[in-house]
Length: 284
Image (cartoon, rainbow, N blue to C red; front, side, top):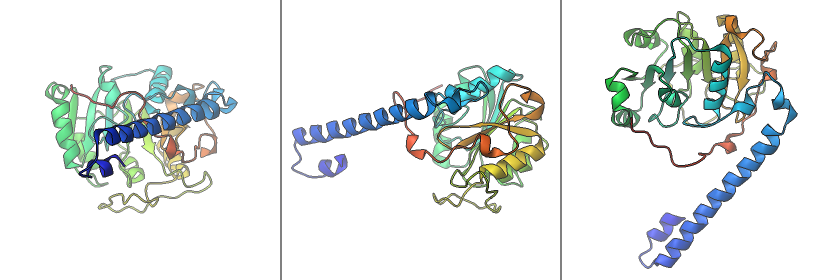
């Protein structure tokens, strides 16, 4: 709406100011409604007050939703070893599951295929890249090359956190990494599929997300894969985007686990996506 007025040759400063104020008011009201929804349906909901549940710890630093807070709580419970992460599909570095960890003395590997995002990472993360706190590879990942990418980067076979968000072959990439044993795995699931459905997008090395629902895999399919690889599903974020798995030998009585994915399934609440606070910017 604002750009429509800006493109009109007779637009006055008063009209432009009014349109800006309307946009800001709309954003304020949207954030207020989201905050009220979270308070009522998450923070005041007895379902999420059980000691083992992770959702009440959701907090956003640089994650898309509340993943930063959930990860912090997971590692508070199981501890950290090497403080090493690997993340596939990091965007430009300002919205992913591991950027916040760079401010906590973690180190790790980022892999991203988008050329514009790669340029932004090289510019805005020059110091951690120069010190090798962060290793970055611009690469289009496939099931066939993913292990070699980690090997060339010197990733240890056991590390703390693996995060996968590639909008398509997520399931197949995790399955291909069986020689690696991350302690925690965060992976995107397709929440339109109910907990009773086990479905995975057929593997195609050229897959690029077309922004439709025909992508990724259902939570139950990931649950079955995690079980086979030795992991327990310990939570999903409230927006219904990411699933959190912890290696079985680390679970103990620290988390709620169930015989299937229904215990932790969250439906798609994509309308909750927002940026709390200022626009994100990183220059390290």
